[in-house]
Amino acid sequence: MAVGDFFPLKFGAQTFARVAQTFVQFTEFFQTCRMPIKETVTIKEIARRLGVAPSTVSRALQNHPRISAGMREAVHALALQLKYHPSAVARSLKSGRTGVIGVVLPEIRENFFCEVINGVEAVAFDRGYTVALYQSHDQYEREKQILGVLSSNRVDGVLLSVAKNSQRFDHVEDLIGQQIPVVLFDRIPPGIRTHQVSCDIEKGAYEATKWLARHGHRRIALLNGPLPLAASEERYRGYITALKEEALPVENGLIRRVDLTREDTVAKTGQLLSLAAPPDAILAFNDYVSLDAMQACRGRGLRINQDITFVSFANLPLNAYLEQPPAASVEQHPYQLGFSAADILMDSFDGKTDPATFQNRILEPELMVRV
Image 1 (cartoon, rainbow, N blue to C red):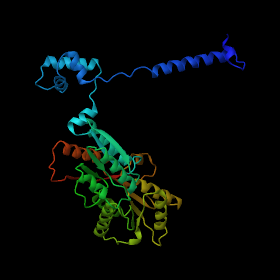
Image 2: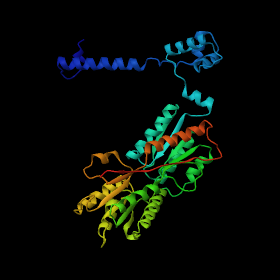
Image 3: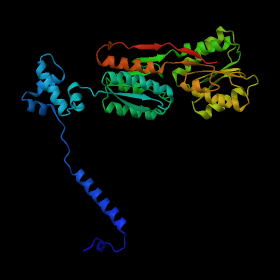
């Protein structure tokens, strides 16, 4: 019987060849699926082959001084040959730790938080921890849900920068109450007793405003962040202090709060430009706000850093590639922020910090002048 007898339609030789090839490929695939899964090599298997107790192998793998150099060498050699890998689950059960820390931040797409993560991972990798990264997308309910997940999975600790819409912090207090160490960084709500790492935002705003005043600006506006953020209040205090020291009037009409979206920033910038006496300089919440506000100014025919000058926070790397960047930006050292936060958290695991006291590290801001 010919192969073609199985098919009611007429196919050419090339078609049959392709069908046959596909059939062979499927056959090989299913045979692969039926292959037995290779068993994981365990300490017991290494001990059986060497004729010693599992505890001896375990100590040898940890280079315990009670195990002879010859036995340690034999154990390590066989472990390498068998491609043995320690079981994370077993280690977790033995130590009571998962080896995982949770990092919760507003938006990973922001360069600032990318640099924070780089700092965190540098410490975590060096100390043998895995980082579980979550984004709140600046939503309170999402942040609350994430902390619940981290609690259920019993991570060893949490690094948290709160969402802009978070106004209640019971979920943070609950986590601390479960004896899970927490380090707050950058966006830090008031009144929570735990470790904190931040940059001196008030000082940064003070120095930025003083710089503008000393360069001849007399109507300095503030495009501040949302009210719930403590960092917004810190910017406001530094701004007001500098205005008073420079004998410049404090005008509520020159102060606007934005929700950090482009649309709201453009709208609030338009309000400032529509004043009878518009500002000649703007201190913006961060570089993203500054870039959106500058675009609104260009739409009004204004020349950036000539007709109106901008100073902001974050010191984004992309500013170096702009023809008209903010005249200056406050460097908040995000890499060091993440590094310090992770360092404090892991020191708490190792008993290097006093459980009864909390560390509060404050990094010094640096005004980076570009024009």
